[in-house]
Length: 454
Image (cartoon, rainbow, N blue to C red):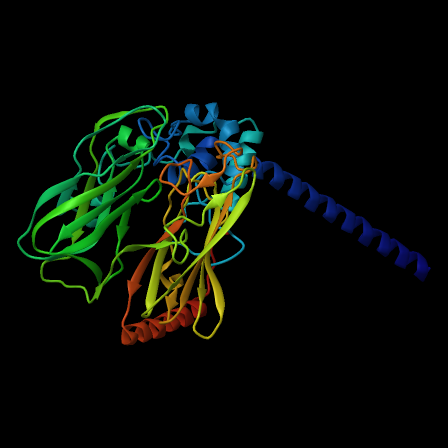
């Protein structure tokens, strides 16, 4: 009798367990169905508005607008392909090595990519109008991007002379020297913005530089590349604009593909520190550090890439005083494949600071380290740069893998250097920043928190 009662109780317990498991399974299935209901209005539009439409809007240099559902629906398969391969938004830092925290990381999170892929796979449904986010607040075409940040237009604007960019798909250069009235008193530059004309200039200016010639000095006051338009110096860091008459020499590289730009004019806007405020640290901004050089040889004499072959170059630069690294921007041409910056410390330790493993000549992005990730390097540190060229058919940008490739200014030739945003420090300032950073990191570890995975 006891055995029968136990068996009956066991049967009830087992039946209850089955019912509970079935209920949990149904709940999971319902949750899964709900989770798969991804719509444009609720899920996709916020992603596009945050990460895409600054470029993908009417009359911009992007090939299509993604501001409306109709736009996004039309290009849904292409959007899926681009975000899943991480070719859009453009962000080429290797995710497996080096520092991974950047101020300007506009790559999509894994969740955002999954959302877009599911939306396209489900037929790109519209959703409910009530779920649509407010329209994005976009600057007017041709506006200064830094004007909102500083609350005023540039304090000084310098302009190139006009140049007729011919629609022929060939490299073109323009290097005028333009007189400038100058300043009555020297001022400290806090930020600059390099602004091609709107909208045609944005489509044809590949990269460029503006060099101020004043007070017997040549000062690189602004640098531009597709994906890098402006630079703001850290607090208490500035670049001196000397008083007196001056001139600006332009170095503009045009690469028109499918469009020309008659009478194109490029502008540079400068924002100064207040007149009564003088930063304690002077910076040179982005500094060019060459890789394509070999002792005793002309620049680029070491570049010789065989047909269907590859080549690896390395260049080393020794820091003669403590240095803060703010950013890095690789520069190669169409055969460029990857480029890295590595620190070799005075004690022999080595650390990869950053690596671009999917370099694209069409993008010249400046990768700006997050505040407490900016490398603080002691005097005597060696910066080692490694460039890899790919002249094979595996390189989608390769114009002709049958050709030998040598050094040259054209996109079909090659070169290799890196623009590094540096701030040189005195030893006392270096040690102070090290101590402050350690204190902040200890405080942050105590607070906890995490970021969504990209």
